Length: 133
Image 1 (cartoon, one colour):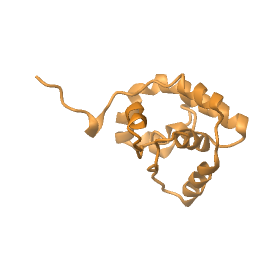
Image 2 (cartoon, rainbow, N blue to C red; image 1 turned 30 degrees about the vertical axis):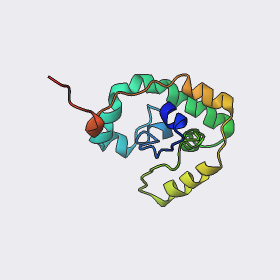
Image 3 (tube, rainbow, N blue to C red; image 1 turned 90 degrees about the vertical axis):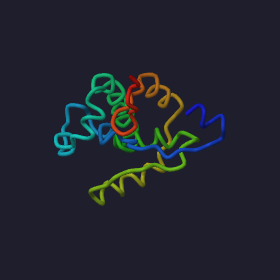
């Protein structure tokens, strides 16, 4: 992200809600969290470190009286280098909720609170380059 800022470029992040993990507390299961082996492969290895950030998303959502989804979208959309985001929907209600994210403005303190606990994830899946032998 630093390089993009320095070069005055923008990006379209992928999986900004971490396959729904930023939309609910870790102990709350969804059909997707139980059945989506691809997202489980991508995110299960970092489940413990992500819990801290997810709980902070919940704290801010409660404070602002909005959903965790809206806090998460407000967080990513607060980045100047984000041109657009990719989201997948299975219900019209999810699309309607996401549109509200355009109006969410997190404070600098809230953003700092979320980011100080964030641990970058190791690449997995198609982005992972094979090790040289």
